[in-house]
Length: 364
Ligand code: NDP
Image (cartoon, rainbow, N blue to C red; front, side, top):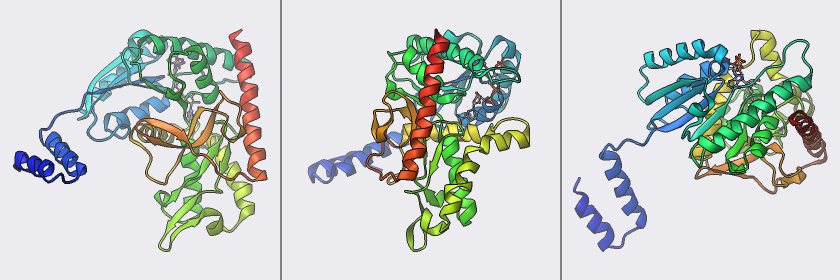
């Protein structure tokens, strides 16, 4: 292709700016210039979710098929050997996009210059433990890791907290590292969002990709509120409301909600381990849409810092419907909230307020 002539044509005829950029993009891609690798930190990498997540990141599921990555894996000293085994497997996977692997138990080395941080690391509640004991361990982990991220990560590092209690861990991270913009700190609600989409698709026997605009409001816990009032399904006769198609408000207001709320417990009971594959896939969906944008007319659920929208206490990390563009999320405004939804949204907000004061008391 003669680019000079094409460029002259675009400029001389003042033909559209878009043609000009199309040519520049074509020239760029045909020059085969490789993108700079993105450094992705995964804490708690030696755990169940880490094992499912790592090949997805290395294959471009999270950041796209042309985005090289360097993976930083952090875990505890106890898990160092497992982490090393995982590093060996990543090398053996010969992943085309993988440009390097750091496996470490040193939080500073792990956080150095990372662009993305996926926080899986945390302590689960074990038999005989009080809720406060688990909270104490987790808030101190998140306080320490917040400081390491603030000091050593790239300036615009985007953080996704997955480890439970995910919303409150993210809140502690945000409050312990005020230098990290609060817009860059989120928690994972996408698994709940995907679970709700899956339930609707199963009920209607449609493709899950045809279902959109479900909302999960609130906490990643059994008080979360899966809301289908604005959700639609693509049909041969256009977009139809989920509520109209299902035509069973009783099911939608009871069984559907509890199934989504209790799905994690059901999987734990069946597998004897908590969700890992679906959690890893949801982590990729969350980061993919945050960084590369949500499709036009579609929103997703993310745990983000409340600005007071929908009457939710400002500063809480609460799940809202968001759209994403140019690496920034925005809460979807102006959705009509009925009385039923209002009560459920407030109940889950109240649980988060209570978790926040417990977390503060653990910090001392
Ligand atoms: P695992 O227990 O298998 O893995 C957690 C890992 O974190 C362990 O290897 C643990 O090491 C490590 N860890 C503990 N403390 C630290 C620390 N200070 N720094 C780095 N690593 C640490 O859990 P899963 O992979 O199954 O799940 C990860 C987390 O994600 C859990 O908290 C889980 O509840 C949560 N989760 C959240 C979901 C959501 O939708 N928000 C969905 C699914 C899971 P060690 O064993 O030595 O303590």
